Every structure is written in C-alpha cells, then in structure tokens.
Length: 317
Image 1: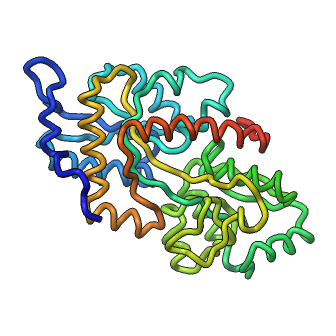
Image 2 (image 1 turned 90 degrees about the horizontal axis):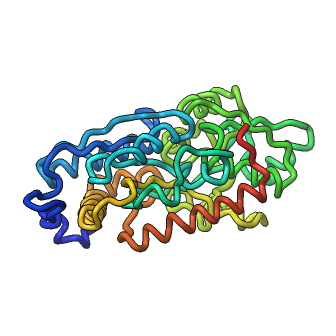
C-alpha cells in the first residue's frame, strides 16, 4: 500500500507548546494486554516506526488485567500532553456496556487517536472432530447437550460473539473464559475444549496448519484470506458485524495539534509496506481513518456493542 500521508514526518514538527515541538521526549504506549497478543504485537511494530519518524523513543508498557481496565484507568489519569497514550482492543468499547461501574467514563475521558487494525472473529472447531461446516456443528449439538467454547476472557469481542450466536442459534454453547488468547487457543488445539471463538491474528497460524477448522466468520463480509468460510449473516443469523480491532487513545484534552500529529504518524506507520503486509498476513486489515472518522467510529462501536450485549444477555460473570 502506498502511503497517502506525504506530510506525516513534517507534521511531527507541530508546535505543542510555545517553544516546544512534539514529541520532545519519549512517548509511552500503554498496552492494555499482555505481551505477545494482537494488541501488543501491533503496538511494538508501530512504536519502532514512530521512533524512526521522530527520533524520539516510543516505549511500550504492558499493563494487562481486568479486560483492559487497568491500563485504561491508568492512562485516563495521565496528563493530557500526548506523552502517555493507550493502545487497546475492542474491550474499550464493550466494557462501558458490560461493567456495572468503571473508574472512568470511556466516552468522555479519552480523545480517539487512530485505528491500527481490524480483525475478523472466527467460530472454530478442533480438527479432530471432523466437522467441516456450520451444519455439521448443528448435527453435533443433537448428541451433545453442552458444547464448551473457549475465548480469551470475559467481555472480549469473541465472548460476545459466542453469546449472541448461542441466543440466535439455540446451540447449547457454554462459555469457558481463559486468561488470554494463548491459553484459550492452546486448549482448543489440544482438544481440551472442542470449540472456540477467536480473532484471526490469534487463530491464523493454527488455521494454516490445519489444527483447527473455521466454521463461520462473525464479520459483515467474508475474510479475504479465508474466502470459503461463510459469514454468520449468510447462515441466517443477524447482526454479526462484530470484529476485533485495535485502536489508540489519548487522555481527554490533549492539544488538537498533538492529536493530529499522532494520527498522521500512526497512519503512516500502518501504511508502511512491512507493517501492512504483516497485518494482512494475519487475515486482518490495516486501519486508515482520520481523526473525525475514527472518533465517529468509536462512538458508533460503543452504541453497537451496547445493543448486542443487551440482545445476547451477556453478563460480567
């Protein structure tokens, strides 16, 4: 992909305060999840590119826990100067609808900065079960009154996808929450749980190896990398435009010039050949939204996930 941001590097000379350019010192990217997952991998890739653009270190600081709440609350309390920013996933827009009380107002405490990537969520089965289609899953359910399915944890996009599917399909799905995508995928591959829901970055290597089989995808359209896999909407279920995505946020009140500079820098990083190729290799798509578009996207996603959680009856277990 060719970058549409020829002025991104020059934008880093934007004056944030009188007599100071931004960034004038190291910037911390607070990642809401543990090292090694989709959010962390993307954050580290763009951090290296941003450092090359600006000459200032962009340091990744992982603060996992509570479905992203620990990192989110931490960043909400930092100075609104652009030197501490949050990198989070879809839980950022799910938590406000799922949690009874949050220590921050997700709609008011942050300024959206940039979208990094969007990843489809797959309904998956252990290959040893020899189920090839969603119809096979429905047949399997006739003799299995309980079907455990694993996800990376309570309140993530895969969990909500699974619960909405349970309500709409009538399948006897029982959620098994893991402490991270790695353990959930490990148990799915080994057969400790027969089914799972996961985004493509986590599942991709195992899909390619044939150890797990995708029965359906929960996005509005089919995956470019796995075009033979039908969408849940195609299979007769409605409202499945439910992706996992990674986004960046700054504390509310961050100067507009800094927000614009960060947005341009992140978009340039994502548009680089190496990073965009990596994102697509995982079955995901690079993000490319300007500030107004991304702000509107975040607000619409909060509204959408709230409606889906109410429909599915998802509870903070």
